Length: 76
Image 1 (tube, rainbow, N blue to C red):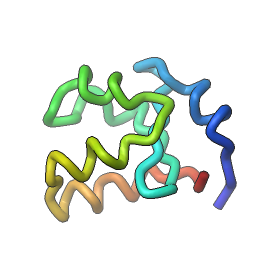
Image 2 (cartoon, rainbow, N blue to C red; image 1 turned 90 degrees about the vertical axis):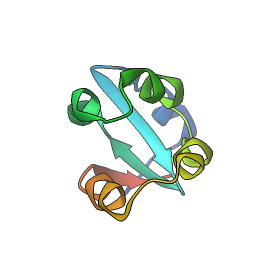
Image 3 (tube, one colour; image 1 turned 30 degrees about the vertical axis):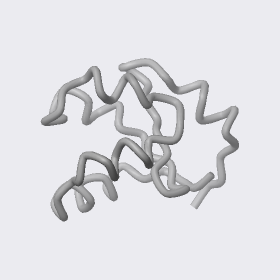
């Protein structure tokens, strides 16, 4: 897996180019934004940053974790 810096992650903060890190893993979720059950706004809040706290606070299902894995592109 490719390793990304926090500054590289921060460059990807737009809906059309949306990366987020969760538990030290980096995900490009640009292609999932429209399908996210919680809507685009919650994703925009964590775009280009560490979304671990928000992700865990919501209490996502096992299916959500499996879906997320498809979008992993690297690690921090």
